[in-house]
Image 1: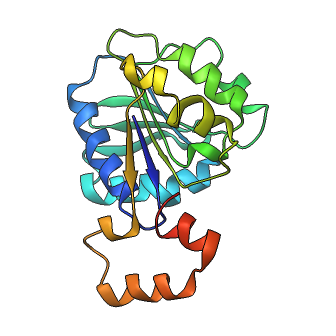
Image 2: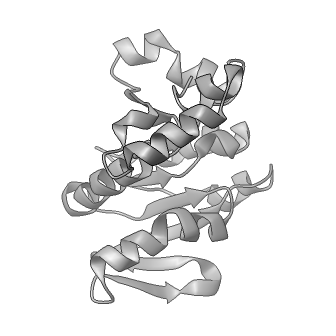
Length: 190
């Protein structure tokens, strides 16, 4: 489940809502939440979830190890900033994962993650901004019509105007700043 596209387009907000549903409805088992670094994951996703859920439903069990309890589920917060990240998840069995800004991860981590989500009904939820049309995530998953046809990959494309919380003034200011390739990437999410 890949939410891809423009910056500030509500991808993370949408993914957070879906992730909270999955915490409640998904199969039992450990879960991963992944960011390029644990700090970026905390800043981009975990802080919002903590604010939404409050301390009763969101708490760090072992912060140095990245273990959380979210809505009664054991969740491991993981940074995937280099090739060594793949080693962090070897041997794990998970019921699902939330991946923030997945195009920033090494491909080796991503491929290992696919094997770890082996509990029946496991799902992976992804957010990403556009990257190169030759990027491994784009070529292998987002633009892979075979995987989509087989129901293995689902994608949702977001553009700047998809975010209802941004004022028209702010969106128009971004649209006036970006030109050419930057406009296509940041506003149209291409």
